[in-house]
Amino acid sequence: MEQADWIIWPRWIVPVVPAGEVLTRHGVVIRDGAIVAILPADGVTRFEAEREVHLPNHVLLPGLVNSHTHLAMSLMRGVGDDMDLMPWLETRIWPIEGRHVSETFVTDGVRLAIAEMIRGGTTCANDMYFFPEQAVEVAEDIGFRISAGAPIIEFPSAWAADAEGYLARSGKFLEAIAGSRLATGAVAPHAPYTVADDTFERAARLAERADCIVHLHLHETRDEVDRAVAETGIRPLERIRRLGLFGPRLAAVHMTELTDEEIGLCAEAGVHVVHCPESNLKLASGFCPVAKLLDAGVNVALGTDGAASNNDLDMFGEMRTAALLAKGVAGNPTVVSAVKALEMATINGARALGLDDRIGSIEPGKAADLVAVDLSGVETQPIYEVISHLVYATNRHQVSDVWLDGRRLLRDGELQGIDSAAIVAAAEDWKRRIIAGLEEDHAVG
Image 1 (cartoon, rainbow, N blue to C red):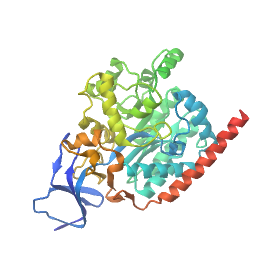
Image 2: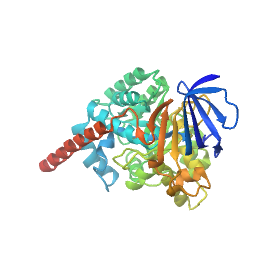
Image 3: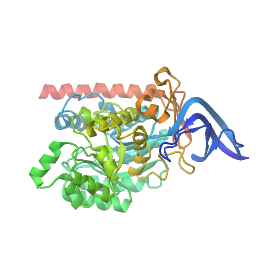
Image 4: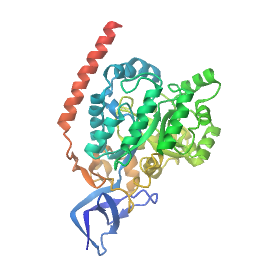
């Protein structure tokens, strides 16, 4: 008998690869943090496990991948609601960040965000925020998978004084985390309206040297595109293409304003698009043409954006919104099926982050990042199509168990090894500080 750490026996397994497959009466064998085998329950097993878990009312699926977020901004959840994007940034987010962002702010905000994501079945996040060292430290301490990069911008912050400083610190950060089991790095120029041409070119060279992705907000709103054309004579996507960032390393976030020609360019170059439907809806940023992108062969992943503009990190909600919104935008109920929405939240996200050889599906040899969802409640009865239920009927509160790299981080809905009370207390403390700062700014103004 071969030894294993876990054998998980759910009612259903949705491996994601191959697309649409649902296995019944099968188990997943885990050893040393990896998936070793998928076994039929009625066969003779060659494995003996330390722990066997039977989940008779559950579906087991790969951990969800949040392909775009700003984790520490969870401490600003709800602080600037019902505003346009630029006023939201200029009068709320940037002033708060200027006053409060620090290593401690990022540590506490990332811990809050990761706890929320684990409870909702997310096991990997692509983060863009200041002090990525602290984000990685927290993620590794908890046992969470992260792709992290600092926003590269032209103006000063608590992390760097200017573009030169951002690039230098980003390079050192990428070197420092090389070889980590759970953390990968990204080069993260913030957006065309905050980054100069020379900085973009240097960011592209840095990503090539570090062999990592480029994480960039692009074509987020029509106003962004119109302003760029007025100021430079070309659309932001064309500018990025000319500066050498347009290719398979690029995870282009939002992409709400695209021509058919630009969609074709994305497909030809192998660019990945990260769709954030709920944040875009809340900020009235526009509609990403997801159906057209998928038809053209573009890899489309899903992200929540930060909790300051969403206001949650709920990938189950994001899947449902993405599927429904795409149908409305295309005027076609057949586009972005439940199967496709689940792919966007799992294997497509893994591809966008360059991690599809490790995560995004339940396959032997991949990391044991697994999520169990309880479908026994009245909200999900009767069950005809499991994948349909996961996208259209299930919510994140039905996530019962999470394994990440073979370690159980959620058991029967309870976080394991994570001090929830301390996380909440820290968030309350930051709320008091942020409110005091806003009141002081208002009094001065």
